Length: 23
Image (cartoon, rainbow, N blue to C red):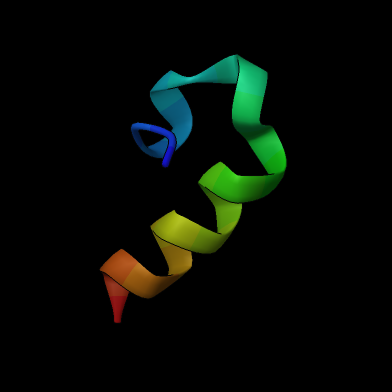
């Protein structure tokens, strides 16, 4: 799992995590 948008290596996964975190 990537650390939100801090991980530029996982931009795709990051977006999903950020959206889920916001909700």
